[in-house]
Image (cartoon, rainbow, N blue to C red; front, side):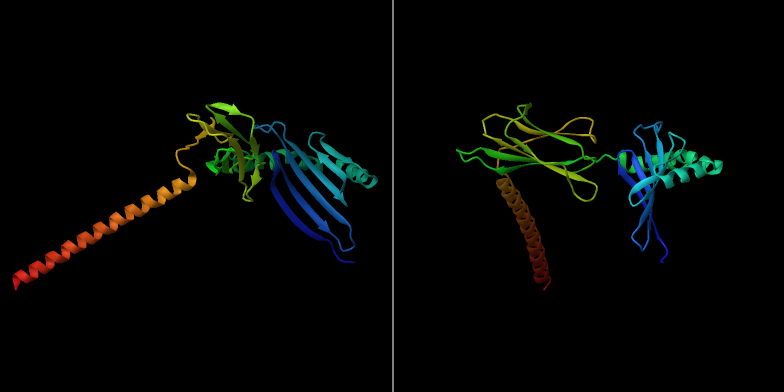
Length: 260
């Protein structure tokens, strides 16, 4: 018979106001045992903090300590026996009752500052997906990138009024690095003087973030203009450098011929 293998895993955050420590035991004969210590809370002052220490066999809890109860409770015949034994040991009970302060409340501020209270503003981009050809409507896309936490609201505005029709919205999609992105599309028929905007509301900002659409040039044309302008500036710089070099070289040749 082989000895059980012990693996310690620490998960600092598994959801809002909850983190756990898991002790896993694996045995060669197919039985599975693990223990889970949980800290659960929702208030910022941790006044509702609950510490739960549970013991599981083949994924079913058989004994559990809950700080709100203040003692162990058994859920199987073996679990009841364990609970009675531990509850009759004052040192064990005292240690478990102290864990809500020693383990939970000591670690919660660190986790909150790094995860629950983390706020990162989204990068917002407004772009044209499809231009109107006179028969079919145009389509704009409003994208919000690299924001945290996940909850976000994207609203289209026409002349500062919310738009509810001809709008599609993706779910908040995880990037895989704790940050999220979301995309919203608006079908519309361009009208002279009409103002179209994308409004994003997120916990990272105290007021809505609004980006206005500039229909003066399609995005492809704006890119061409930017590239052309960059080329023009580069050409001017090179021409100026060439002119300075030519003048210096000419002046040097004139001075040399004069001295001869």
